[in-house]
Length: 373
Image (tube, rainbow, N blue to C red; front, side):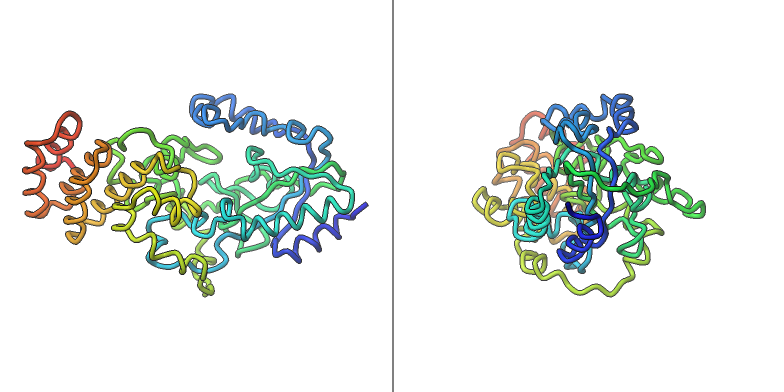
């Protein structure tokens, strides 16, 4: 049977930067949180993500004895400046569709376990961050994210990956506390513009900008549009302002060539006017939470972002998108964005659209002309 030292050595050889072990006992504290906040997490159950079942590793692997946690640093290279203001960094080199990066290394790790008589599962609904804390690999932040105590200068730019196995290994000493310094003054909580962060280990996911960008239903409520700023897909605001992340943000990182290669496909104008084939070939393989059936949400998000740039260069693009789209959610957001930018050209277009629009789109146009963007 493999020793924990051999497993750690193999994981390091595959460029996982830290490794921890915890038992396969149920995550009772997470189960209590989910029960208390059932309404806030109902969307997950509705989408088929059974978070409650994920609190017990034995529902994943009945013979489970240990959870091995592999620590991946997903922000180990610098991303293009043209992408970072608009997309969460964890999505900028995501291979969950292409399976040509992290997936290859994770498969090699599991193959190594299997070749040595250990069965494994990598569940998507187990509380990975809590598993890492229970393995003693770091602490939580007030922003509900996990901070490593060993890699990436003890920052939160890490992805704990839980691997449930049917072999027993000595567990680490849990570090379940919040590790934020008193002097940080709750900067992440204050900086969250939509009020999603409620305190230590307490977030309302329905108000989180990341959630709103890819799971939000209908046109984004008007009161949230300006606060959501320039985020098209995901959000890093609470990480960007965190003092615990400052050391890593100051690091001189080499460029991420994979992200640089695809950056041109993610220009705002291209996203606003993309068709289904463009989306499926250029965008979806990298950011897959929204399918081609949700192309309207992508375009709505981009229109909102264009409005929040306050840049008049996007006025012609928004006018074109309003004319070419038949989805009222996209047209309504284009109207809002034109009102937000507010140039003479934008207002003339809104006045022209007003006489030919109907229903909710008319309401958006009127609000934009009235300065309520």
